[in-house]
Length: 523
Image (tube, rainbow, N blue to C red; front, top):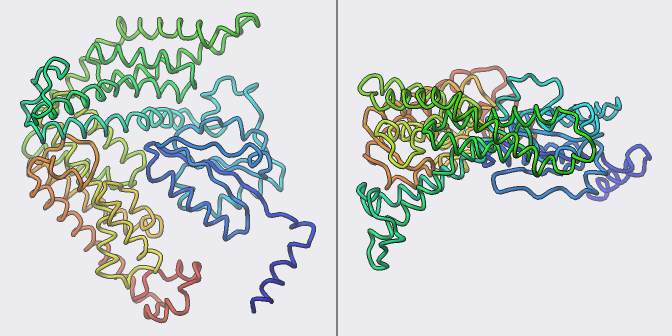
């Protein structure tokens, strides 16, 4: 049979129309550059192997990215972009049949995307070349014809994706400083003036002060990279300047958002002006930074800064005044948002809201409670899917049971995306169950008064959490609720015609993905 299969493999290869396989290059990216980016890449590569095409993926994740070999890009017959933030160096792929979608499509329907790009190649549809018609990099940041609402989301997510590592580093360092030296460490003198190598308090003060410096970059980085997402590199200088002004005038996170959008818009407007050829050389280095920084600085200091600072103070006062049933309701709402799309835009809104509250050197108690509730709720879906595949494995396919093993680690690490394979396969059961568990956990965390100074870390930062035991109880309660609902909801369709016992199902269909899809709840 090996010889027969070898013959079968070589026979079509000799035919001229299949002399070489169809070649696709793909780029995947997501706002945080942690989970979705690599899950989409893995999904596309697997679908490419199944479809018999050569598919190479460039992951533009948070750890940076390695550009595809220009020869590979040149030889490609088609391009797939699966991204939620602008693709970097997108012009490399111009002039080829291109499918441009969100990163979730790369995870959920890779075979369909491969089919789409092959169809475009057969019809000779290609993307336009360089910026002659596009004008500025912002108009090339997404699919042509994309609405400004979609572009706005991508620009904001671009800023958030660069900001999150600063939040994680600064928050964890400050939390470690508090854990070692207590909350009074924030009033310690500068370690430049007083540092004793043998004193734990000195080390705690050092960690706290490094973390505070890291936090100082949050708003400028947010603003700078929103402007970068809009106008490419020329947007960085006015974006950072506007963000720093927002920090200076206490306009905070809201000020950073506005400064970034203003900076990007100003640079876009300048780039539309026709410039004489002799002056073009100094435009990106001198003229654009000078004019855009002056305009953005004027607008932030004189026009919009004060109202935004007032709005930020109002929001902070409202958060600090939350107590009792209002706090519990907010916790439930944030839990619902964290579990609605498992790392998508709604999840990121809730997470960004929480991190914005703690992104100061001295956050209020309510802000730290909100951060605790958000992280607890975000851990629920993957942990619940892992538990469900353990206690009732018969209700899941062999592939899902394998994913369940990885979901333990992803959930414990506060990576909500660990539940995406389950939600993609059965959204009507998994997502509502996840939201119910997330709401329970968020509400309980707020009710228990658990606080969290670190913006990430999952189970590994429990020693830094206020009321850690009750916090874990809140997480466990939500996991149990989601697990029970998933098991009940999946179990309700057990009697569906054609279901078979798991032993025979795996024996007969364990290797056939189409049949597994038809009967995902063999019991």
